[in-house]
Image 1 (cartoon, rainbow, N blue to C red):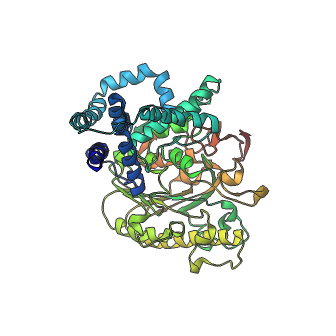
Image 2: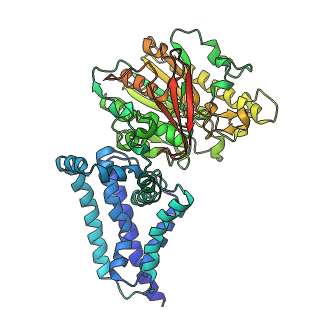
Image 3: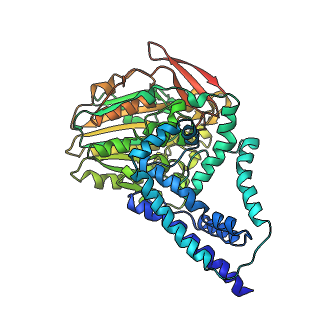
Length: 536
């Protein structure tokens, strides 16, 4: 009996190794950063493969043993062409625009052949092991159970509204993300389309955006600080009664410093970051995030910048953000585990631990596009400040949050002292991913479709060169989309849209990348103020 079980273990191990080798060798060839999964996740994949070896029907047994590898062929093709992982709504676009996709692939055949090669070879090796495997136990109806399980997930999504698969995750194998995307498409997007919900067809000016490489970017360094859960309503710089940002207030009259309120493109991190980094918003945001054509890292790379993403968030916390960073255009990708491995509690990671890495980078002569990704003022707020930033001694939520804002100000003070010593021209842009509610209307945190969730601070400063006039003339409540336009111009691109004037028909999404969790329609007035309407 034991000997027979070893045959199952051996066959499962062969397909497990082939599945991992297919993905990680492709990533290595394409120079895509590898995010390793947890031991538990790898063990789960192996356990599924082991169970598949007991399927009695030979065809189904081989199919499910090769399942992730076969699906990964589609993911590799998408990564090869777009540099991003597949989103569920792209399956809908594939079905409705098949001729256009087919025409593109017939010209860009290497995006088909390379993934096929990386799929056929391991599948053939797996078939050889499969054909030569010794006698196995066979469990009747197990193949049917596997089939029913893979049908169950889209049905569960349709019935319960489960969101598993709405976005790719770096904590899943790439091939499994394809299955999850198809599951979400089948259970959520397709039923909405059949019931006449046409929001996925909505137009957006972001789809009409055209960029042209106009000139060499003048900046030696461009630093984009991406904040977390910071609201201007609790910043002294924006009129808050408490002294939460004394340093920023002290430089507020500097001609090379500018600040304004801004509007996020989403009220959750993964939505807002995906849209901001890929120059999209509203129903078109997920399309642009999936294609990655206007990804800021890709644009910087084309302008001969080295590209760097340094995050004080853990790999687990980044699992829904990392897929939108156009990894093929990143020269460096570091998470909390790389930057501050001594940090035990990831919720208490100190943003200032990013600064030593930044200081070392600024000493290098090459042009650099650097994103510093903070943990910022994300809950739990009592863990978001150091002892020196514990200014407000109360124990209530507002005191804790305000101390986290003091911590942000301390970060900016130390950041400023480092960058001002550089002899190169440096442009710095800060914006938070989304805002934070501190009791407004009984709301706390973010996610609710209220102004406190989408209003964020925008800061810009420059060193050894004047701050661009456009950065200082944006209207009040500038959008995330406008900020991405401004950044693209500073990277040397000519654009066919007004980067200063807030876009008409701006849309802010809830916590679903396809808009199923509600959205906010924004109409700007001439004075930069705005009206909004929430649609659930």
